[in-house]
Length: 242
Image (cartoon, rainbow, N blue to C red):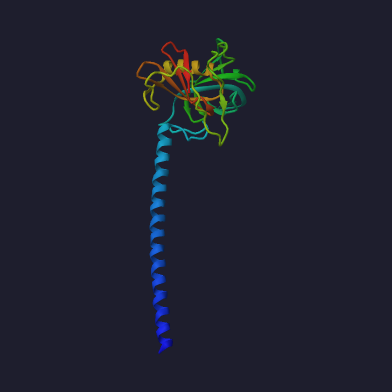
């Protein structure tokens, strides 16, 4: 009788322990599930925020954009083919340039042909940019120098995988500027703004030019850690960057 009573107590105690453990497991599971949902929501929010900002958050080699737009780059020719050529910018970014039947060429200030593009030559390319590929509208071999950048400009920071983009600001940023605002422009206007930006900040790739509400321009820059936005006034003079 005594043995059966002890056995009954042990069974009851074991059941209570299992119930408590099961309840604890349910709490842990619910907490874990809730935490996972929260983390997932936070991750989604961060990705959306990063995409709307136009950058990956790590370096300048990646950016969110709507599609190919007017832009350009400059550097030295590294190879030439029947369909175009490649160049390397002063910051080490490799750029593929595609020729078309309507591409025009210039050497210095004179008209030229595609044969003027040879390995080692410095070039300025204007055209439609899609990431680091440019379909050339105009290629200028041995472009003329525009002198030294202004003292406040700072220096281009080359792209370094894994390094966070610099947050420094140089010169003047238009009042009430909001990243992502404005209207993408093309043609002569985009070319002038691109030339001005590349003359002050060489090393990257201009992948679009946006006209802001005050009439000035934001030249969007990729392929470097800094700057990402170059601001050009209505007289096509660089006034600031960030």
